[in-house]
Image (cartoon, rainbow, N blue to C red; front, side, top):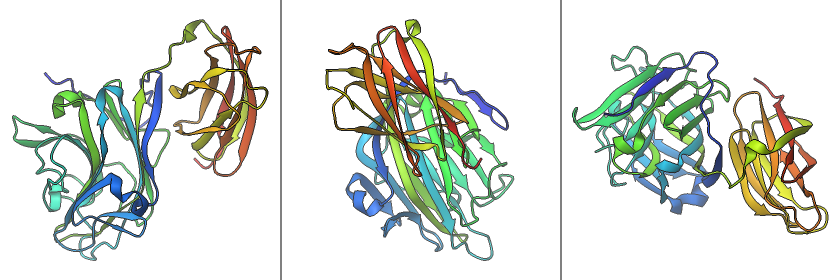
Length: 358
């Protein structure tokens, strides 16, 4: 029996998180430069730096998959992307939409025109569709979570949410999807409130722990340009071997940032003495058992909500205790550098507060 439990969100929601390390597999804002890491089929194409899933013409369908390697479901994954829908036909205000799809099929498969949105004819998978045409679904602007059910012989609708931003307004829109602890959670134009979260056993539904991820799209007599502007895919890995329950956390600094998309760097700015550290930001381990050197190690980190706490943990004491690290936080506007210390009993922390537009 599949474990299906749905939570549709219209207010504050606390997502159940375990401590995880995020490993970025793929991050691109110039698709032309990373074309060799993608499998592109049908009418999809790369135009300059943008991935166009289907053009503003009748009866088009296309797909694009991150094909450098499969994603491991037992680790969990995250993906973020910026999309834009433009050049809608005048009569129908565009159609039919696009979908983010998780599957284990042949990458050359295409899933159909129109309200199939390029995925409903696939031989398996799970999809979050961004639908811009009303095929007796209640509105022409909604998102739907669907999964393949062999008993039904195709994809079945699991949940639909209509109270979302207008998708066909020609503006850039942000989407984030996380799968961890058995929950698939989806954000749209918000880092705070998910649109929906559903408990799904993706491995059971898809029949494999290793899956492809990517996009499909289709048009019919209604059409639009369906473009992906940026895209990131990352996996979660197990936490480091630390007994953090018995370590005292001492918040030492507070920094304000104007973006939730950060670049975090660590390095040893004093004497190099073999310090090994891990860095935890919120519920995510972003640096794991790393020996500090003079050069900077930089990782991306995106947080949701209004604030997060970044904690430095020590795995040893080096030659000159305690472990000391310089931590730089870059929000795209400025870089703030803080010194943190940690030993086997205590860890210093930074409170990061979002101070940009809400």
